[in-house]
Image 1 (cartoon, rainbow, N blue to C red):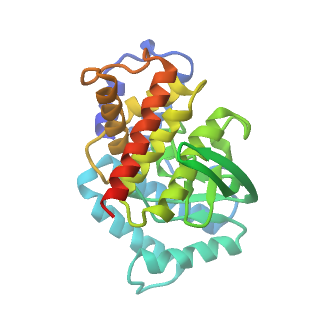
Image 2 (image 1 turned 120 degrees about the horizontal axis):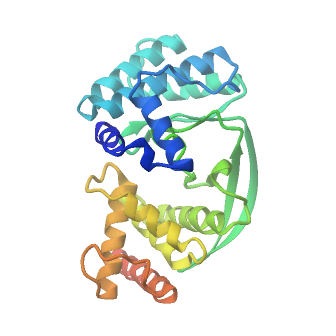
Length: 302
């Protein structure tokens, strides 16, 4: 976050317009001015408001000083013990089910756990389960999808980017979970490819390759996105290009960099080359081929 804020301050506010200007202002207000907890007004329950305020304080502190993430996580644990009145818990695995049950009694569904480097909290009020038949490069799958809506917290990535980025859903061995506010509609290509295609590949891989590291799951699912994207192709490529990294603890960024590198190699392009100008059909073909080759490599080492 210090690097991000420095970058924003390094460019005059007059250089930003429209949604970009609003984004810059929101980021500086949230992370640079020491603003309050800014809890959504629609979250009326006092216990839930205290929990969300505690998580947001942790997110701000951990983002502001990554070297102190472990310390801030320990403080979060102590604060949650106090709020739930469950002292002496051994770890988050023991504490989070207690928190989840208490929130459920107050009418809120929740997701905790570890998302990348930070502890997660998502809060929502509505769920609807549906079945989808999803075509993947490796075959078709019938998938149960829980459609989630009525959010008061969309997680730490959403908070860290003032709504610009965040989880669109996740996969478990039994079902998929879709964050409905992330998509323009359930008929959009963004939902069908970026969520259904991506997460159903996770669903299939969790069964086929149990124990595979998270970044490798992301690598394979992101190849599905590029193998199937048409109208959203430019957006998907931009998202991958904007978020690259070398830390496997941030599996999306780590996988993004490796997906782009693998496709440049297949296309005979130099390191760092822009993929926007590549013929769409060829890019789709190479992404699907890389996924098939990755599957063969895994099957050959089993």
